[in-house]
Length: 131
Image (tube, rainbow, N blue to C red; front, side, top):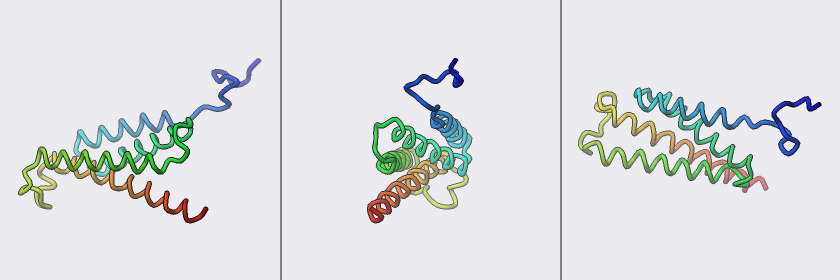
C-alpha cells in the first residue's frame, strides 16, 4: 500500500505554492477593494512572490528574480496608469491621499510593484556577485 495517499510516484511531495497564490490573491483583493493600504501591499507582494515561486518550482523559470522584477514592473505601470487615467493630476497631493479612494488604492498597487521590482533586481544582482 502507498503510505502517501494522493501523491503519485512521479511527484514525491505536494507544493505549498498554490495555497500562497490563493491567499495572496484574496488578501490583495480585500485590501484593494476595501482601501486598506498595508493589506493591499502585503497581499500583492505575497501574490507576486508566490507566482515567482510556483513558476520556479515547476521549471518554467530557472530563478524567481526575473519574474519578481517583471511582475513588479507590470504592477507599477498598471498603478501609475490608473492614477493618470482616473485621478486629475492636480488632485495628487498628500492631503488627498486619504480622501481619494482611487488614489490610495493606486498608490498601494504602485508600492507593491516597486517592492517586488526592487526585491527582484537586488536579489539578481546579489546572486551574480556571489557566483
